[in-house]
Amino acid sequence: MPPYSEQTYTPPATMPSYLIRHASLRQLQVFEAIVRLGSFTRAADELFVTQSTVSMQTKKLADALGVPLFENIGRQVRPTEAGAALYQSCRAIFEILANVEMTVADLKGIKRGRLRLGVITTAKYFAPEVLGEFSKLYPGIEVALKVSNRDRIIERINANEDDLYIMGQAPSDQFSVEARAFAPNPLVVLAPRDHPLVGKRNIPLARIAEEPIILREPGSGTRDMVLSVFEHAGQRPKVRMELGSNEAIKHAVVGGLGLSVLSLHTLTLEGTEGPLAILDVQGFPIMREWYLVYPKGKELSRVAQAFLDFALTITPSMRERMNLLWPNLARYFSAKDKVSVKKRRKKS
Ligand code: PGA
Image (cartoon, rainbow, N blue to C red):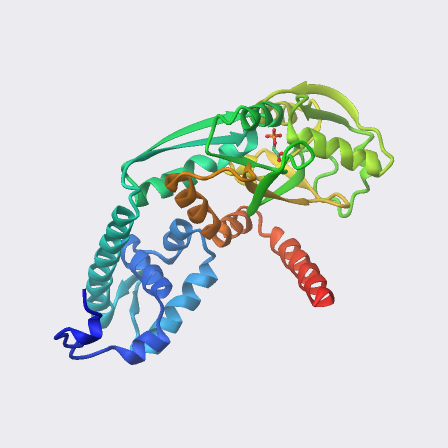
């Protein structure tokens, strides 16, 4: 096939060069969601971003076009005439782009296939949604999800049972593995809403060690982390109970049986203002990460590679999701980022 430049190819009559330079697909996506859902708040929820991000993106888009895109009628937000026209164009653009994605997926030969994913217990709070998003891109792919605790996942890696794994810590001490961080996994101290420590600032870990603690079962990654934090601080937790499920632990905490340390993801459905309160304890939240793990040297199937590539693109929305769940977290992200920037500077 001759290169496109040598064919009798006519370039498009007009190129929207001003828009190309000043507007972005992300802005169009935000704008489309606001019009479709009739609300800035619902658009922010759907896209896992904050309301201020939504307002900022919309303002940039309106500035790029030089016209207002929304008008307020009473308490309702409606598109202006220009906004309504843009909305129709957005839908056409997204339809074309979705077809491009499908064509590319076909060309890559991953229209059909199977993905076996082994995830550690706590990852069940987000892995099904991530798979849902992935399946929208690759509807023909069959997905098998196995949820187990850390010890079982390590056995599964050993037996090569799945294509990829999601874990809170790579088992680098036992295998040679590739581990790619892709999402935050903060661990927080949970108490029942009416506990006397709720609302206290900067509680020392020694004070938490005086309270009964509910621990995950042996073999859990969360448990290992909690025990090592107490050990490093020279404290011994007063373990009242061990339970093999995050949900059972949450109920036990609400029932007044003790405090616990769990991943913030466990509050995904009820939020942080519900019956469980997050305590402000020194050294917490413990900012862990979720990793995509597979044995070093393992040749990933095309489907597994596609999932890995996809999962690595969702880091910003996973962060945003955690920030929305618990806005206090933002300062820990920025503190951590500052540290890693400093470290990088020192290295270079
Ligand atoms: P777990 O592991 O669900 O087995 O506790 C989670 C983690 O390691 O963070």
